[in-house]
Image 1 (cartoon, rainbow, N blue to C red):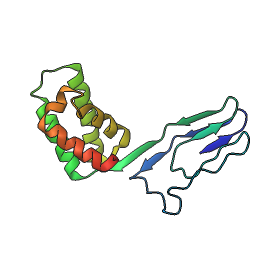
Image 2 (image 1 turned 30 degrees about the vertical axis):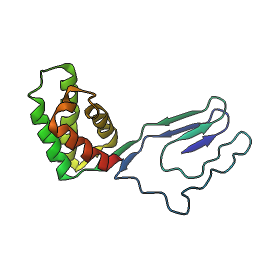
Image 3 (image 1 turned 90 degrees about the vertical axis):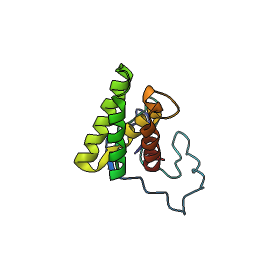
Image 4 (image 1 turned 135 degrees about the vertical axis):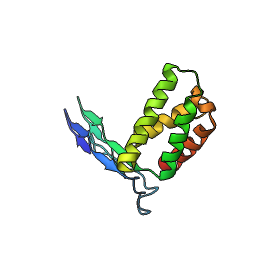
Length: 149
């Protein structure tokens, strides 16, 4: 969504299902057109919002739901089982709660929130949490990387 002009407002609260389609070859690598004075120049845009102008406001509260494989569900379940060996902390409880929510989303819809996956990847990779030391954390991160890139 794009809005331009004084007090412009653009808002996106959509629910997007599946992985975004790649840009067609005809637009890849093209430079954005030069904006007109006071305007916006956008070459190619897949989702999101842009607003330009005095007092302009752009809000993107869209949710991307990504198709999840049974393998991701299984690796999340295995990691949740392994979490029980860690000392109970707020950090472990928070990670477990996000894993449980992802597990529930996948069980109910075969999809999972892209934001949740990115949050989990951040916490489970590179030793960001105690859970990152568990063997199945690496497997979950690899599965997430395949889905969200």
